[in-house]
Image (tube, rainbow, N blue to C red):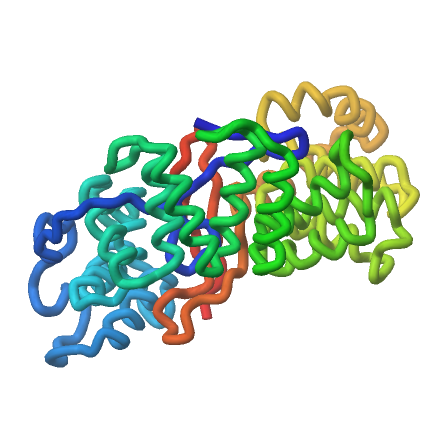
Length: 384
């Protein structure tokens, strides 16, 4: 299931505790935390120094170290092991984190039932975000029977307790008629509430209405402000959209290079449309100098990022640019693009998110799957 709008496509997705997008499943049975885990069940996992009992904070810190490769070799299994130790001791964020690992098979064998167990415990531990997670579980029918009415109820409860993401998702429900009649006014009201709570996706959705919607008055200055807030929170689609808005309306830019910087950030996160737009700017000039080499390079990156669809769209430009540049220069640029892509092949939705203050939920990037499924990848973006 995937919901789309005129401006963008988005999946209501699962995530990890350190991020803004959260999806979790639910179960009412409290199983033994140490049962059926893929990681060792000894007091201390292999590769760690035995030092007796650890506090929950120490377990979470160690888990984060293994997750991010911070001072130790990166090891998803040991990260999962130590998060599960902390989760078993009742830490709600660790419960949510290890639930995500079981949901996606990160460091453990994928197991939606165990994911549901941990997500339910996280919700029972008082996290408002966990109600959003449970709502998404009921929407998808993942680990629980699909129940749109219950999903709506949980989202309303979470929104009333200050969850901007819940408000944003309620906006989606009304925008696309998920369990309720379509109501664009209600959808916009929920997006406004989510934006007022500083949810980056709600800010993006509301800005998109102000920027692009055919049946809505345009307010480009307000749209730019909302896109900036969303982009600053690490939401990649907002980086692209703000870059595009500033290319079209350079008077709204805070500096001459703001649009290019945003598009480069989005392109580095895998947004092929940003790569293509950078190529267009280099090809046509205007806000950037004419540069055939840069145009060819960015177009090649877009093709690597998006495959056949981008290749068909950019084929004529690539052939023209190649003819002007010559075979040797074209081969060199192809090699540069290939080398770049090896280091930037993930398609990310969030980047550079700040982790938990205890240091156990490191700054990471949230990736979008290529197959359209609602599950996402976890990508270490920063090693402190």
